View 1: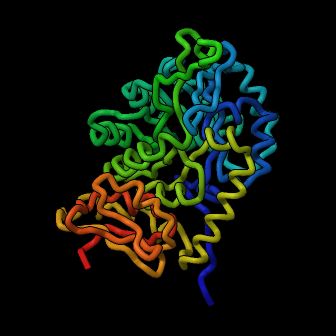
View 2 (view 1 turned 60 degrees about the vertical axis):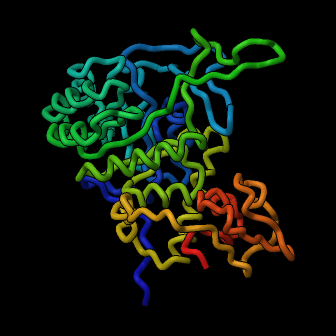
View 3 (view 1 turned 135 degrees about the horizontal axis):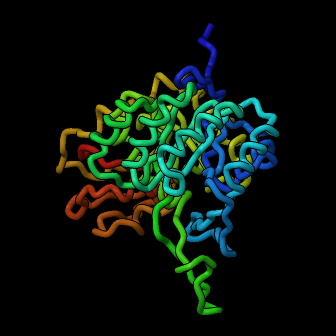
Length: 363
């Protein structure tokens, strides 16, 4: 009999039913919203960033743009209100409470984390665009809390290996990355005006457009840590989740996509993960986690060229249109390569919808 398929992930003694986490953001801004989200196939839920004081954002503060989400949402109910909200929760998932140390000093954030664990936090989390604040906060928090500690790193941190080592030495249990990228903006050309209402009309870009950046960042972080990694940024489907796990992530967070497409995207992705595991004979995430790490520095090939599988090719012509060198053409309704011009760039294989063309050794 086949081993039972298991989607769960256990981190620092805390078990998530699946690797999907609702990351901090508008969908987890109070007890009502968190309880609503908990009805879906979500492994863990992270609160919106907890600020010390109540805060409000100028309207509008979230817009769909460029296939993603530009977010300038600084709304917060404030720390004292959060304590009351946490006591209203009725969820089965692990709760991750997030404090933004860009608005709350490290020592104060650590004290608040100690109180948050008494209100149901399974993890206490800290996020900041200044990673040095995170190292200091973890050091303070280690003596204040008994639950695991997570930090969320900003994008594009220099010397990531050194930072991760210092975070681990300080006592972190999981490292998350990355945050939205920016600043970003959009313009209403009919009104000749920026769309976002906050000062400067800027926000931060998330969801699908930043996924390739997230994937590379998670692969780099995973290569430099021994603690679990939570990959967040641009995830839209089950395939993205699988890619992040292959890069080294233990859990995968989402917030932009469920804002744009609804919370049932978690249910669809959970189903997609189950289907993929079943089809590929995968019984647990341990079998594929970090599997691409040994291949991050492959042997360099300069003699590979496009190769067409005539059986799979349906003659749609997408590869022909995308070939900058003019090396591809349709012949008898099948793609054909002219090796006088093909440089093996790889665009053709990435646009093919039928997996019919690959850059490999010439036939």
